[in-house]
Image (cartoon, rainbow, N blue to C red):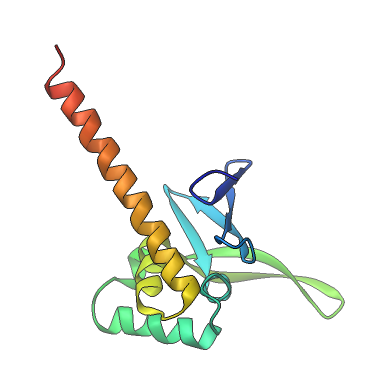
Length: 138
């Protein structure tokens, strides 16, 4: 596992582990963002799908994010009874995952917010250092 909690698995899928290692998710990477279904968001934040769905609805109702920019359908294969069925399932991008994560009140959601904030801080610090190095190169 890397220090940021993500483990690379072949380029398209990353595995996210919480600080205590109890929650582990396969995260789909595509189009320079990551995608989670409602079920996986619920698993990540250790809340019900109904709770996630309520927060998704509020994000859209308040105009914080637009559905067309944050939802993508992915085909997944799931077992239903004894047969394998392919379904198209809505997945939500990182913007939405972060937005939902900031609305949920739980220990795991707090850890996720700290993790996301640290990643953003590292990105900003690296960007500033790179720009400074280019501008003030001797």
